[in-house]
Image 1 (cartoon, one colour):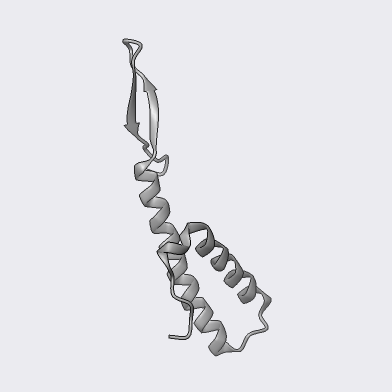
Image 2 (spheres, rainbow, N blue to C red):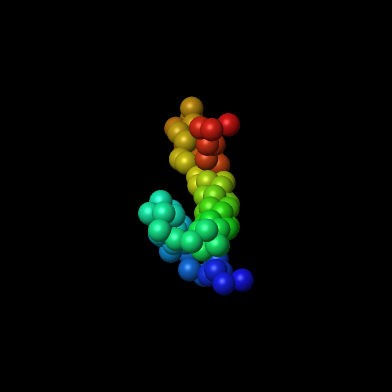
Length: 82
């Protein structure tokens, strides 16, 4: 495959930057149909990767909660989209 491979070691930010570049390039509309399709496929994979990373991080995020007895506890972050 000619497209760049998604690399976890690049991190979320670099992969997101690449996805944004792909979107900008596709919106420009100056590529051939074949090149557009290749970039689109890469963008879909990057989108899946970034979405998965965000879901994983969301599950790990903790929030501090003050209990009735005055103690603090850590609870798993519950997303608002549920």
